Length: 196
Image 1: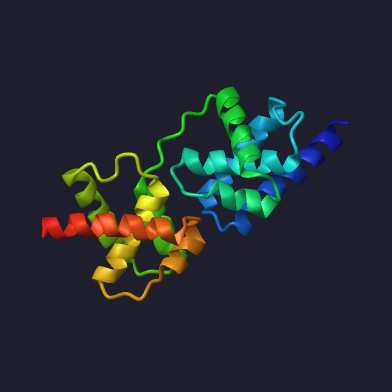
Image 2: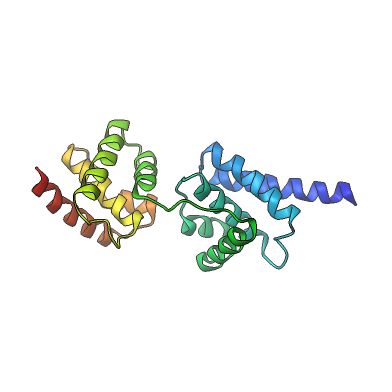
């Protein structure tokens, strides 16, 4: 029976690794997810939950715990589950595993957008600097979604540097509507002009 349990756990751990690869998450996320899955399995926190929710929940918690951006919508879509169910599983794991998660910041999403849109590192660096400058100079970020804010910053940075990047391309990689990107871009551009 022990070998069957171990074999079963190995298969599920392998599934976490497969999911991480499908979503192109960094190796560091995969490593943390593998460890977290072992904890979930050892503490039997998987009972009464679909395997897809367990795998997705573990991967999302792993990414957040090391401040890496992975969209819960993207995980849910890949696994064929509802985002709401996935996030409920995440909260359950966080409570029972006592995992403090750092707050999500626009910087995390800026890096993800730039990497997924294959922008040069200089654009990424400029976007990060612009984000810091705008946040420090006003309360423009207050009450805004980090994904939407980051999307606007990357789009603004690309326009300022003459890089051809569409709102649609950003929307595709970060799951933010083009309307939101336009709104954040306009607000950020107006503030940027006052700082020049």
